[in-house]
Length: 77
Image (tube, rainbow, N blue to C red):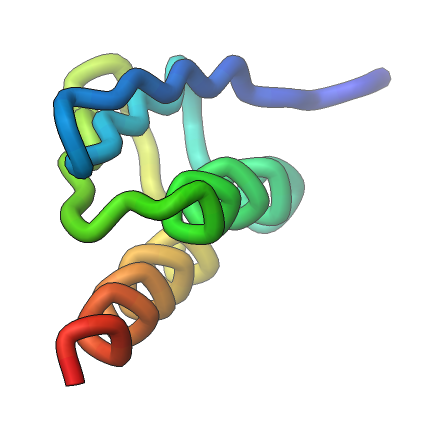
Protein backbone atom coordinates (compact mmCIF):
# COMPACT_ATOMS: atom_id res chain seq x y z
CA UNK A 1 0.00 0.00 0.00
CA UNK A 2 1.42 3.36 -1.04
CA UNK A 3 0.30 6.42 0.86
CA UNK A 4 0.93 9.83 -0.61
CA UNK A 5 -0.50 13.29 -0.50
CA UNK A 6 -1.10 15.51 -3.51
CA UNK A 7 0.44 18.94 -3.04
CA UNK A 8 -0.16 21.91 -5.31
CA UNK A 9 2.06 24.98 -5.28
CA UNK A 10 1.23 28.29 -6.91
CA UNK A 11 3.03 31.63 -6.88
CA UNK A 12 1.56 35.08 -6.43
CA UNK A 13 4.52 37.39 -6.84
CA UNK A 14 7.09 36.26 -4.28
CA UNK A 15 4.48 34.46 -2.17
CA UNK A 16 4.12 30.70 -2.52
CA UNK A 17 0.71 29.17 -1.91
CA UNK A 18 1.12 25.51 -0.93
CA UNK A 19 -1.97 23.32 -0.64
CA UNK A 20 -1.71 19.74 0.57
CA UNK A 21 -4.71 17.59 -0.38
CA UNK A 22 -4.98 14.92 2.29
CA UNK A 23 -3.63 14.11 5.70
CA UNK A 24 -0.11 15.12 6.70
CA UNK A 25 1.41 12.56 9.03
CA UNK A 26 4.60 10.56 9.60
CA UNK A 27 4.30 8.92 6.18
CA UNK A 28 3.40 11.98 4.11
CA UNK A 29 5.25 14.78 5.93
CA UNK A 30 8.53 14.20 4.01
CA UNK A 31 6.69 14.93 0.76
CA UNK A 32 5.12 18.02 2.35
CA UNK A 33 8.52 19.19 3.64
CA UNK A 34 10.05 18.74 0.18
CA UNK A 35 7.31 20.83 -1.43
CA UNK A 36 7.47 23.74 1.00
CA UNK A 37 11.26 23.83 1.10
CA UNK A 38 11.39 23.72 -2.72
CA UNK A 39 9.14 26.80 -2.81
CA UNK A 40 11.57 28.62 -0.51
CA UNK A 41 14.55 27.46 -2.56
CA UNK A 42 12.79 28.81 -5.67
CA UNK A 43 12.77 32.30 -4.15
CA UNK A 44 9.54 32.60 -2.18
CA UNK A 45 9.85 35.24 0.52
CA UNK A 46 6.42 34.55 1.99
CA UNK A 47 4.22 31.48 2.13
CA UNK A 48 0.56 30.67 2.55
CA UNK A 49 -0.12 27.08 3.51
CA UNK A 50 -3.75 26.31 2.73
CA UNK A 51 -4.80 23.45 4.99
CA UNK A 52 -8.49 23.60 4.04
CA UNK A 53 -8.24 20.23 2.26
CA UNK A 54 -6.25 18.51 5.02
CA UNK A 55 -8.27 16.67 7.60
CA UNK A 56 -5.41 15.70 9.91
CA UNK A 57 -1.97 16.99 10.89
CA UNK A 58 0.30 15.19 13.31
CA UNK A 59 3.38 16.47 15.12
CA UNK A 60 5.64 15.82 12.12
CA UNK A 61 3.47 18.18 10.06
CA UNK A 62 3.79 20.80 12.78
CA UNK A 63 7.56 20.32 12.62
CA UNK A 64 7.45 21.12 8.90
CA UNK A 65 5.50 24.31 9.61
CA UNK A 66 8.09 25.35 12.21
CA UNK A 67 10.92 24.68 9.74
CA UNK A 68 9.22 26.91 7.15
CA UNK A 69 8.86 29.69 9.69
CA UNK A 70 12.54 29.42 10.61
CA UNK A 71 13.78 29.31 7.01
CA UNK A 72 11.70 32.30 5.95
CA UNK A 73 12.77 34.19 9.08
CA UNK A 74 16.42 33.49 8.25
CA UNK A 75 15.92 35.17 4.88
CA UNK A 76 14.87 38.40 6.56
CA UNK A 77 18.01 38.75 8.67
